[in-house]
Length: 156
Image 1 (cartoon, rainbow, N blue to C red):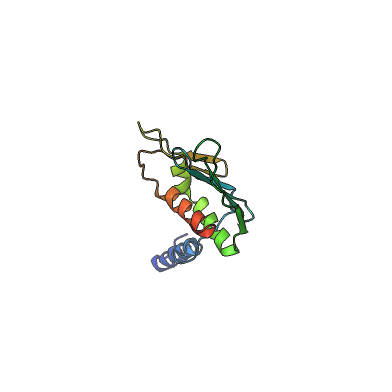
Image 2: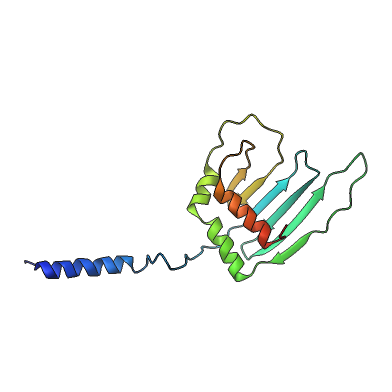
């Protein structure tokens, strides 16, 4: 069966439109489920360490642990904080946490590094775990997720 050139062009155009229907670059991405997230900051030689946990339902907690200044003298501890992310905030973190580029950064091996006395900073997103390398590796998705967690929870 022969198909005229005009009909073939029309069919190819329709097939292209059908393929692109779900690929609108202006349409907002749909977030997957929010994975459990744990993040630490500080420690090492720093006087305190901070810990964030975010559950898949958007509930979060933050704790700061201060080290003793000298034997037996511990500064007054800040009270723990907790809260609940809004649906929009939860979706925002879910988009960041499910980004394949973030997952690639979390899986990427560290480069050679001779610095080992920096603060301990960890990020766990679902089953992926990352311990910061103190040789200033460029991992912008990890940096962005960490910054958004702070901004959406403790704001400091």
